[in-house]
Structure formats: C-alpha cells, structure tokens
Length: 509
Image (tube, rainbow, N blue to C red; front, side, top):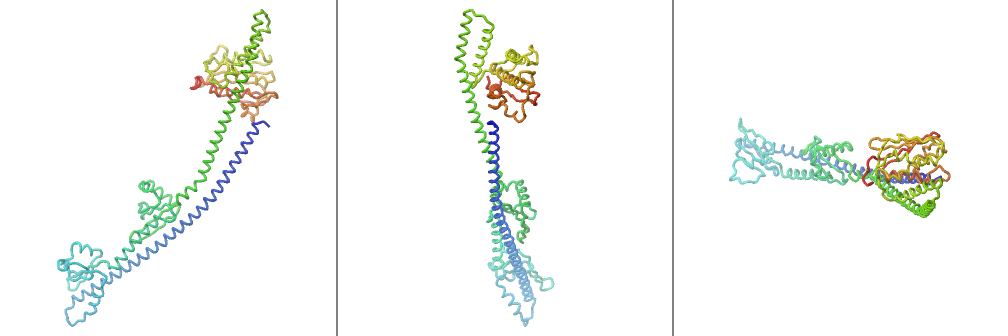
C-alpha cells in the first residue's frame, strides 16, 4: 500500500467523520428547533384563543350597549307620548299625574321638545342659556342630531318633535367600549407571543393595524400582499366582527426567531462546509508549498553536486584534446558531458522563473528524438508528425521542455519493454499547440491514471516515480499549460497529451 492509497483512505475516513459530526449536529439542532417550534406554536394557539375570547367579550359588550341604546329609544318614545298627551289635553279635570311622572322620571336622557318650526318648548337634562336660545339651531342642533327626532303629532297637522342624545350612562359605556376596542387592537399588535401580525378589513387587503413588522415594509404594497398570502397559508386568519369596526381579519405567522431557528441547520451546514473548504484549501496550499520547496531544494542540491565532477570531466576532456588524443569514444564522451551540462542547467532552473522564448516545437521534438535514438533499442520505431520542414511555434523554455519530452519518452520505452512504436503528433488548434505522445506499451490502469503524476508513483521496481511529476510541474507551473493521460488501454498503449499556449501568458515573460 503506497502513500497515496493511505492518503485517499485517510481522506475518506476524515470525510466520513465530518459527515457524521455534521449529521449528529444537525439532528440534535433539529430536535431543539422542533421543540422551540412546538412551544412557540403552543403560545400562538394560546394567544389566538385569547383573541377569540376577547372578541367574544367585546361583542357581548357591544350587544349590551345596543340593548341600552334601544331601551333609551323606547324611553324617549314614551316621553314623546307623555308630552303629546300633556299638550293635547284641554280638560283641566283630567288626571295627568302619570304623564308628569314619566317626564319627571327622566333623569339621564337629555331631551329637547320643539314645535314644527324648531322653537324650543321644553328641555330636560340639558344645560344652556334659556333666555338667549329660543330655537334649536347651530351647535345645539348638531349636538342632538345623532338620532332622528321622534314625531309627536297632537292635533290634526300640528306636530312637535322630541330630540334626544345618549344618556350619561350611554356615553360612559360608549367611551369604555371605544377604549376596550383600542386596547383590543393594541393587545393584538403588541402580542405576548411576539409574532408578526397584520389586521385587515373585510377585503383582506387594506391594513388596519400591524405589529412586529417594520413600518417601512408595510408601506410596500407588494410586501404586504406577499406577507398576507404567506400568513394565510401558514395559519387560518382569525375573523372578528365588531359592530363599530365591521368584519376584520387577523393574519399572523411564526416569530422571526422561529424562522431563524428553522433555517439555522442549513446555515450551520453552510458554515461548516465553508470552514472545511477553507481548511482544506489552506492545508493543500501549505502542502504544495512545502513540496515545491523540497523540489527546489533537491533540484538545486543535485545541480550543485553534479557541478564538481562535471567540471573535472570537462577539464580532463580538454586535456585529452590538447594532447591530440583522437578516438570516437572521446567524441561520444564529449556529447555526454554536454548532456550533463544541460541536465545541470535544467536542475538549476527549478524554483526560478524561466524565460520563455518562441521555439519551433517540431524541431525540438525531432532533436530530442535524435538524441534518444542513439541511446535506446533499435527495436523502437519512432514516428513524428508532421515533417521536419513544418514550423509550429510556441513560447517555451527549451531546456526544461526537452526534459519533459525525454522523461515521457523514456517512460514509454520502459513500458514497451524496449520494443514497439512510439509516435509524436504535433498540431495547432484554437490558439494552442497540441502534442500527443503515444506508445504501444502495457498501458495504465484507470485506477492509477489520476495519481500517475504524483511523486513516488511508478511501475518500475527501482524507479523513484519523479519523472512524470517533474514533467507536470514544468508544463503547469512554468509554461501555464496542461499535461494529462488522453487515453490508455491495457496491453495496447498510452497517449499523453501536452497543451501549450501559442502566446506567452502574463507573468511568464
């Protein structure tokens, strides 16, 4: 089991643990939310029941108020009849005590008796200057215009009119009723359950009063219409029918606290997910930075270690040339020394920003293959498309890019067992240069294709698994390109694809 398999297993274990923690947290939070929701709904039901009882009380008082009003009207009609009898009776021997007692018994209802021209004949329970006020007009008439006067016809077409207004008891009851209605609406608006409330008229559109809602929002008709619809769908509106107010409806819904608690698990999950994402991103960034530092340190140390023996070899080669020694082996050794110098330069460039220059990619591929042909099995058939005369330009760092081609080619040769066909196709497409490198080797299993570029992944018994990882870093980090396994089939071969930009991206100059 390699490090990446263990790493994947640890990731799965940590992910499963995180999911379990979040699930348990959301489950417990949901229990609390449901409990709070039930308690609040219970309070809302108690509040709604109290509203119903208060409505019934107000209606009872209104009915009682109307009964007193009807009794006052009957009493006034009786007074009118008494006045009529007193006026009609011409016989001095007629006993009018009964009618007089009726008039005298009126100690609460203000009445004004006038003739048909409005001239005041008699008054009872009314205070005004009788010497100056002769006719029922002006403010006095307005004061007694609350109810229609009772006609008291006493002789043919002769009429008297009895005007009256509410008694003192009636006035006090009316004030109490109005206060009760006002406090009733106040208790609804400022409710103990702290739920948003809207009171409308019978149309369910016009707002009479509201509570626990921002005033500026009530000014928005669209918000009011939407909120009333939502409240009506959540809870059946309470219908109240007050005589002085008419039919009204009380719309209400759960408190904002309940709404917040309802969405709290979702918000909690989002925060946890964001925290995990940020943590994973930070740890991944730190890990990549650490890996890059290791790569840079290893590469530069390698370049430094190669420098000393390489300088010595160069000196010995120059000494042999000066002594006139001529041998084909020396020429080949000179080529390998040049190659070592190039490799040393490649390692020295790791960690620094390489300079990208336009190069003919076809030439680079042909030159790399030419070097490798003399150092690999003759059973390998190298095919390059297009021809050597073709020019396909792209900005690259020549030494590093050659390193990538060589690494992929060497891996392909090992996969083919030093015999087979190796094909390189170079093409231009939508502002990019596409390089496909195809071998006829043993292929890469799908389970390993995602990790093929990770350090340490290799199929060789003595391999370090650094070649493809280094190739990916050179293409992605230094050339801002892409490298990936385009296709692979077991015992049929693998195709690696490199995608380069035709133009130099900002920051690579």
